[in-house]
Image (cartoon, rainbow, N blue to C red; front, side, top):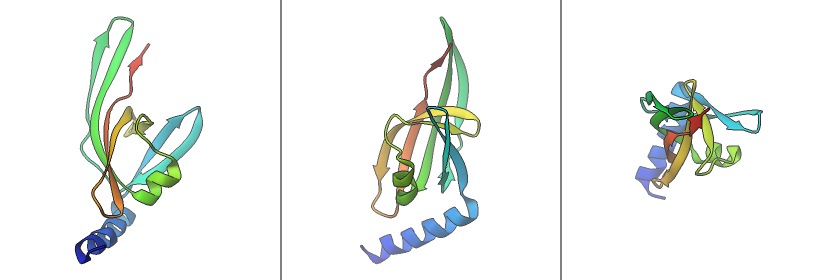
Length: 110
């Protein structure tokens, strides 16, 4: 790795220890969670649909690769972020020790 990537990796880990935020993983009733380094401001709204409502959540998370891997996160995983459900739509790797998770609506509640 480069000096830049090594330095970013060190600072990401340090920042996560100070300002990390716990995010719950919603799966089969098991209580599981992981620490996100950062949670971008979550845009949240509700949309009424025939037969239910859609909690429209859009946010971005940054988490250590080790946290994502040990939690078994993948595209499609449903998370509870600040009390709202969201689904991981995409996981990006920027080359340091973190992954960038793009999250959107989890689905329709009946």
